[in-house]
Image 1: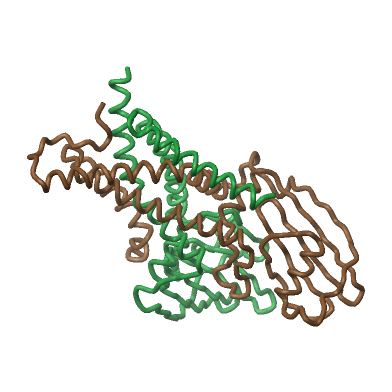
Image 2: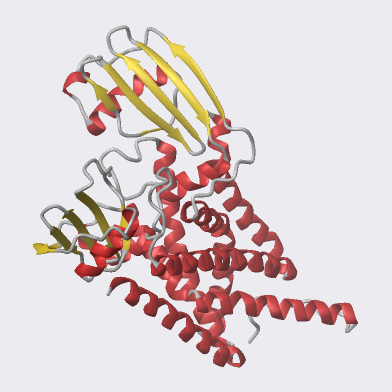
Length: 209
Length: 229
């Protein structure tokens, strides 16, 4: 039984670990960007503005908000050629205007839609790889669950982010098993495990009490 | 029993192969010793990340289940020697017996009225001080263990687009240092796993396939989407 179990766990640990390693790197590297407010620029940040006219505006927009509004505006955004994840929409009633933020990791687009003239001013900012990693790290996040993940690719990212967590849990447990089998490494391993546990619980206790 | 990374190819006992075997052994130890030391940190960040990505999971609800206590107390107005918002906030916190990371949420319009928040995992303090009346109102919200876990994931004392909020509590800096250590540890573990795969020839093909698939999927989101759309 053990003769079969060990190689199976070892291979799963190796191959699944290699598969998620790029995702782990995304989450690990972006920690430095977020915790230290440091966004390195690997190229110039560009911004372009254009105008789109004769856009289809949903007839029932006045009574809509949240996810139904986003769904109703999808045809408008498609006609304006603005793909991506739609964020919190600002509705300026007096000006009959909607400000629609649309995000693709590393790119921010702001669509200012005039509901009367059906004209939109579209400003696109290319923010680069570091910003993309931060966006991915924070997605989907804890805020706005009703409206978030309204673009297929970001829904797919949520599945992959979840899968990364489940695989990290599997890989860490299988890693503990693979280490435990190696008798010669147990003593140092146990010491390090205890040192890590006491650091973690000590810090968590000090922070929360 | 062979380890996950033990070389299966017999080599010549030259100095270079001995060096290589030594490097392989060191790399293997680095991989699992790093993993063992960071195990609980990794579990925390993985689990809390999952919970933060699913705010509709009711079992992990913390804010709606919080315990709220309001109180009003007398206070001594900070003296003329205590200058600046940070020093005054610290003085008020000292009088209230509160420690934590200060969060600035409002702009101060009236010099006699001072409003700020203090946070630490599990506890949220909303403080409004009136220097003229020498009174301070304190709202304290305590959240459950799920709330502590969620805050620990994001507790770094800074906000991306807000220069006013900076780290001002020693324990926050220590926690951010531990976040950095976990991130460096994960990068080390990934690199060491790549080296181990390279050293194990029979595993290279499928290992490269698994890594390539991961790179392709991840690359699509990091850069590919911008290229496609």
